[in-house]
Image (cartoon, rainbow, N blue to C red; front, side, top):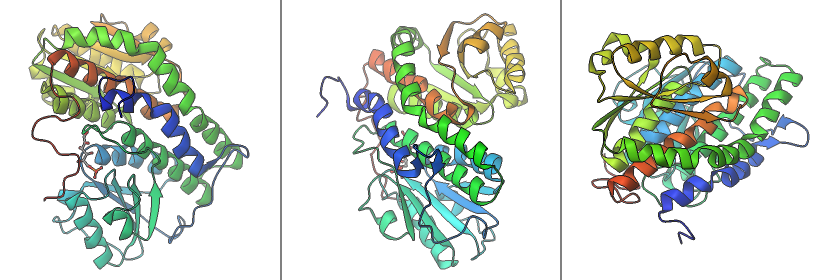
Length: 365
Ligand code: F6R
């Protein structure tokens, strides 16, 4: 049931504050400001590496997870696209753990990777949305996302719930490995607890502006997305979302890679979406935007108040997001990129919930 919404995707985008809240409550004890103890079959102190693999949007959630596990928990993470992981014959250690991320829990390549790690004797965790799925059944521990059924083929709420689980796990790992103090854990949990409020605020604040912008974007043939740090996976997710539902060609790049190739594409026909909250590397992204502007590229900047004030470039549009704690930034910034893809597809008149050639659950290799 779509309720008052035109599409399931629109409905699912708007459900995010609520389902993120349910998901976080499963992993965090808000009253005490701590992460919950999980019944894990491995010890975050006993492993040297964590291997994450998944496909598509779930893979991009895993890539954000790598930044978090390495930054907060000092735990090295290998992250792979499942269809690469299962064939590339890398060394695996039975002492380490593997984590698989899947909304459906049925994706063929992800499942095959899981079985591959099982054979190698690794301990297996699965971040899944469908509790009764094959991937859930075959793992040692299920780390559920509580997104509820996701009907739209383009993943939205499952993605932000996957991010919520990974962020909570990274903070838990950091605490168990003694890499953060009790005070720091409290501060991170407090930040995470504000995700529902900020995602809600973001929807209120930017949705109508993005709808207008999307009308203009729907006239272009190509779009480039740029971001640094955790906004780099988000740039790839923005591009994936746009191409799969609007059929506009889009690419996501690490902003620092611009000058190593993609800058050759920049002209007035190539809008560039830059995801850049005012963080410690903001100035680096500003210089990338200047490179784009100098070549006539049209910039769509997604940032916060401080970023908007310090961007010093002319933009086609600037979307000003609420000021959010660093750890939740990729969760909150996922919403404007989902909305941009959604409304662009609506203006293109495509079948938003059932894009051509795509299936919700990819059970073939
Ligand atoms: C993109 C999308 C796909 C899935 C991918 C993995 O919007 O939905 O890229 O993320 O097919 O699916 P799951 O998570 O079910 O393993």
